[in-house]
Image (cartoon, rainbow over all chains, first blue to last red; front, side, top):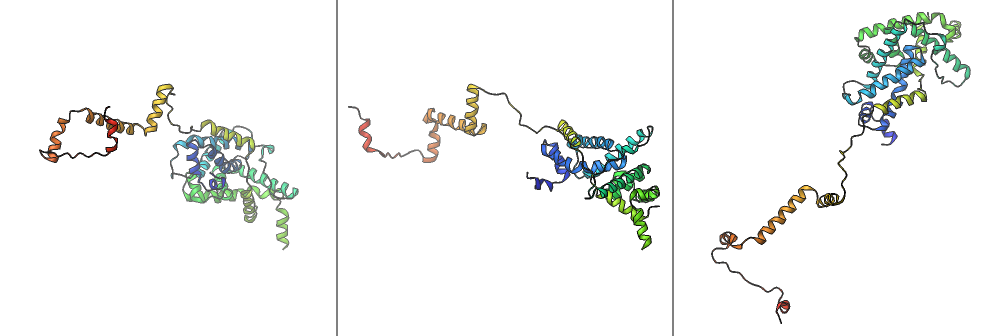
Length: 202
Length: 120
């Protein structure tokens, strides 16, 4: 099947093709899903290497469940987010006995801006954000990342976190407030000091 | 405290930043996929046939398969029975259709060939 046609095929259809032995389906599913899985895991763990291991494990679970996947029961992306949420929770629980995340462990974020200075500033901002996210309680961090970074709607987040919608709203709001408080002392690091001064001057 | 505007901008910036998996990670994922992928469904492979059996198998396939061969065999056997059987056995049928007296009109379809059948 031509590539542009395959782009329109749903994740579920691709998974069925994979289960039926189609070799290209795995490649297309990996290209579609792994960046999202990696991004989510990185934001939950603030550790790129661990996030890569979680991504590999989550995708492995998807390959294994493919022959038993029940059509229409859940979206594949929702199922994957739930798997990653659980894997990361387990990992963080086991990590709590070890030392905290060091500065060198902060994820490297590819910058999209043209200027090198702007790229560095953006990378610094993302590093600061990931460190701040890492200080949130697990459930608040999951809710904030799913809502404000992954851009999911509350009903889908409720499915992923296996909570009611009101609980998700509450977690997201509390998470955002806590995040703002954590980041309060890092305005310069975030590159917002000058902007704030400019706003005050205006 | 970082105000809402800054926090929303920061979160939006993070949302717009796509983390690309490295080539090594992609290779690991695809390696796993290949390792656990169910095989393509294949037709059951029979024992290879040689010589007579292969020829017979090809003949049957050429005639249209088993059902066609069965039909052909039945027609052949029926023709043989009709040819060999005593014609008196069919008299009841001809009587039923044509009555007691059956007129048989003879017609020489190829009179010019009669000379070929006469001796001397």
